[in-house]
Length: 208
Image 1 (cartoon, rainbow, N blue to C red):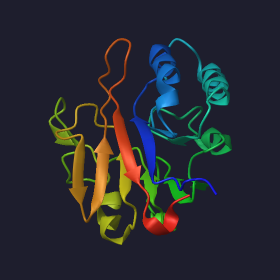
Image 2: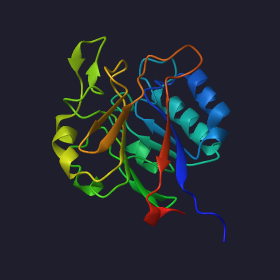
Image 3: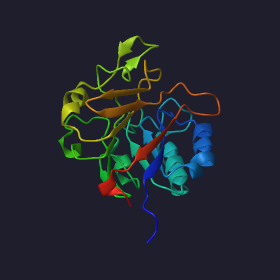
Image 4: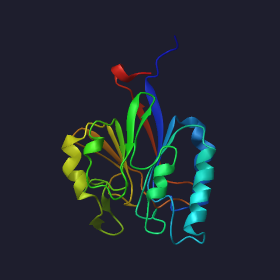
C-alpha cells in the first residue's frame, strides 16, 4: 500500500472579476497544489464580453485544469438574473463534493439556510460571516458580511471557511468558533491575484 496522504495543499483565490490574466496565472502555478478554490465573482457584467461568452471562457478554462476546482457563486456571477448555470460546472455551486475523503461544499451566493453544510470539512461561500474582520471592507469602511452565515457559525463543523467579497478585508485570516476563516481579498495586482496557500492537515481518520 502507498503512503497515506496527510495534507492537502489548497490555492484559494476570490473575486477574479473575469480578469483573464489572473486565470492564466492560476494555470501556471496549479501544479503546486492539490485543490483550487474560487469563492465567487468569477465573471463581471462590466466586462466587454457578454455573460454567455464569459461562461464559455470559464468552462474551457476549467476543462483544462489538472485537479478539482471548487467554485461558489458571487454577486457578479448572475447572467440574465440567474446563477443556475454554475450548478452544472464539474464542482459546481450549491453542492457537496467528496474529494480525497473530505466533504467540500460550496454554498451559493443567495444562501440563507446553511443546515445542509453543517457536517462539511471545508465550506466555500462568497460572503464572510458578518461581524468578523474578514468581512470588514477597509476601502468602503463597512461590514459587508453575511448575517445568516454569522448566525450559523456555532453549528458548522468545518475546519476551513473560504470566502471573498470584501476586496480589502481588515484581516485575511480569522478564527471564530474554531473555524479558520479566509478572505484572500480582491484588489489584485496587474498580473497576479492575491491568494492564500493553505495547507490542510487531514484528521487521522480521514487520511487517504
